[in-house]
Image 1 (cartoon, helix red, strand yellow):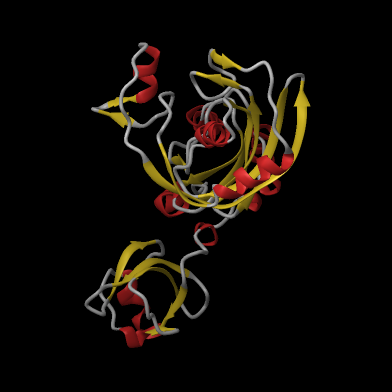
Image 2: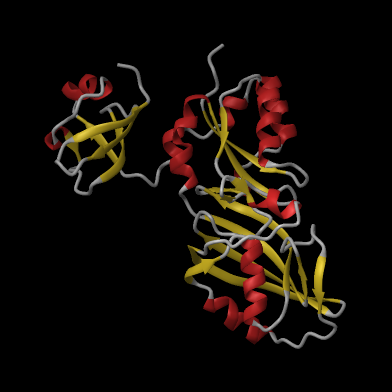
Length: 304
């Protein structure tokens, strides 16, 4: 039986790390070559695309794509982990805030923003992960990093006793910490803030509705129908431009030879990566236009 190849969209349950999901998938599928496309904290649920077999070669391209989240922020509380898994470090008895004030602050976060990674995160400082240092009771200086918020909108506001819970949807770039965004939104309102709940609703253009649970994956694997639910590697990177190579240069392309621009249609005008197909529509791999004007292979998928 040939190895499964493609992108398997998993709906990650709460209580699992991303590595737990990969380990579980390896056991269910009986294969080792599986890679995930962006870590989710254990209590976060949602879309976790897994790349199987040869599709692991597109992980880096999928990781770069925007992600969408549905988040709940509670105003008036803060914790050492920036979410409710940690120890509450501040609590405000009275919160006075209106929906209009929240809307205005949310809107102000749209665009490129700076974030300081939380201490409870996997970022490495001097060779050690921040969460390891945090568990030792240490706090170290972290460099701020720029991320981009493409879209942000409030989806609800309800009062949980004396504290309001703000629910919002956010579409953002890779590397955005939603926990930190919640804290920063609270700070902009003059209040402590903590993330209560988070679901990743879209990653790499894959929505939660396309995802399978671990139970469904086991069921389809047993029935021999899992292949029908995989997303082809080239579809998963459909954000890369599509071009076709002339038939007489297909073999050269698959052998890793550089090609002239005139052998590819439509004309490649921009330096960078693109998907290359043969005239029958078969996916050959990822290629790039070099600054020299030649077309060179980056990752060849088909066989010569």
